Length: 81
Image (cartoon, rainbow, N blue to C red):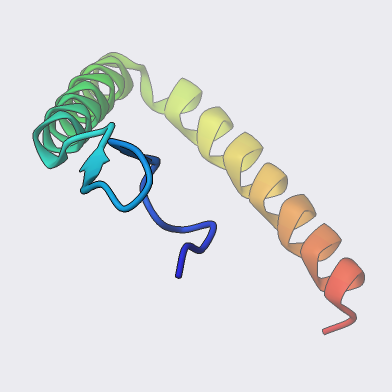
C-alpha cells in the first residue's frame, strides 16, 4: 500500500518489480552537504561575533533577545498558551 511518505517509485509494468527513483546514497550526500554547509555558516558567524566590540555584542544580544521574545509571544498567542 502506497502512502504519501513512501519514496517515489516506478514499476516495470503490470506486476513488475518496483524500483526507487531516489536512492539512499543521494539522500545521504544531500544530508551530509547540508550539515557541512550549516557548520561553515555557523563557524563564520562565530568568528564575526568574536571580533565585535563589547558594545556591539551587547546591542546584538538585546536585538536578538527582543526578536526571540516577540516570536515566542506570537506563538503563545497563536496556540493560546
